[in-house]
Amino acid sequence: MSHYNKTHNPKPKSYDPVLFRIVDIMYKLVHEERPTMEDLKIEYNVSMRTIQNDIYKRLSCFAIAKDTNKQLYIAQGV
Image (tube, rainbow, N blue to C red; front, side, top):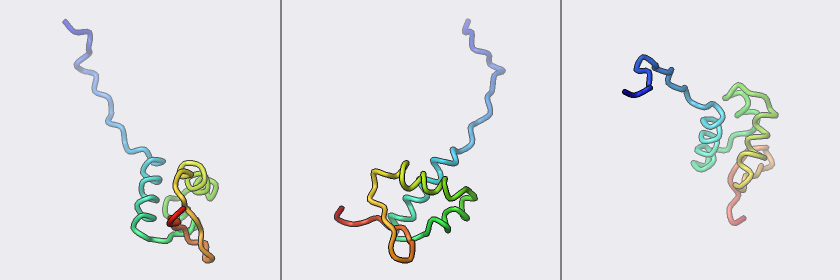
């Protein structure tokens, strides 16, 4: 007989907010939306530091740049 407790039913895990935010930011950039960091901060209800970490650390392998209006975009040919 198995030692597995059949009454054990863990709660399903909800989504990971960091992963959701990172994927959503990349989706926006790939689809040529140009959000500012301030826009993202407000949309995801996080601090500016969190958005900066997302862009400059978590997404550092992508060529994300800011234009003169502080809008983010993926730089081409970098």
